[in-house]
Length: 403
Ligand code: SF4
Image (cartoon, rainbow, N blue to C red; front, side, top):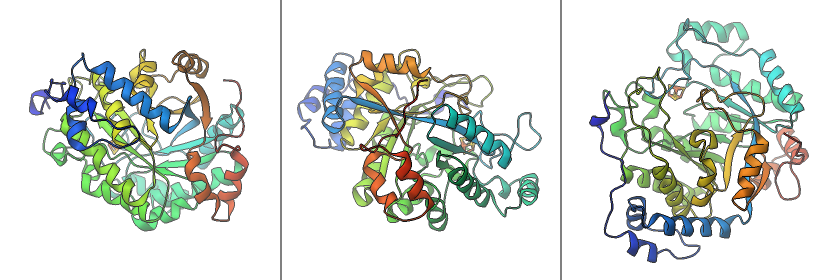
């Protein structure tokens, strides 16, 4: 795979950047045409774009940037897909291939509980048992029919045995599985990544990754919307998509949110190169591209939580606060970022200081955002009971402990 096979994502000046800036109306989402002009804006117009995005963030969630204190639970790193940028996935027998046992899940969750964590993030490969008989054997040995049955049981275990709240990211889900998992977790997630289906052609980032077909991912997100399940999604930038694709991916998310009102968070995640991946020689998106993507996301979705992971923009991550994000995502004081293990999360005290240096207070949130809590609590049961105990009067995390 070579970078020359893709369209350039390098910002190119368009004559309309200054005009587009003048068309931004406070509180109103920008149009596709304006977004396209802004994501192409030159360095001269970038400060004005950032200023507009930060003002929009302040209208939505003033003075505060949130994060979720979490433990990362890689329930299994076996996966039936082969994304060109992934260091997480393994085949059975590969060094490091592992499916966590229930005891391991509980041990990590309890250690996180002691450190004030409130989120148990389950990240895992997509339905590995469909490809690997070894995973079918593992599941049989554990007593489950599928990875999703096992995930459901582990979410319930976390709810029952700890104060943490599960947030599963298991890949594509049917409507039935969304319903089942929503009974044991207050929110769930699936990155849309990109609406560009050409990323599945031979040699591209999603070659041999059938679960990354945009239409299938949009279907899962829509099914979650029909069931009113608080949902995290987002885009991955720098994997071969164009600037236009970035805008269209955000618009597809906006369209689903307009129809169902369930998108609790949009993640703007940048591709980071690693020596062992098929995309090892791929160029990373620049910091300027990230700033433009976050700012345009904020202006397209003025009333949706926008997140960017700080460890993937280190050491300059606090500048992303100028682009209108209002959340740093999940940060763990305990477990590494298994998806980007070479990029450690910032120490929470560092994150607090650098957030404050930009004029914001850092607050700990739960894996479900405040505006979605009431809907989850209204369904009686263990999940509702645990969520009520975890939340404070503002819908943020009840207890903040020192990092
Ligand atoms: S990014 Fe996710 S779906 Fe793709 S190979 Fe890695 S674990 Fe599998």
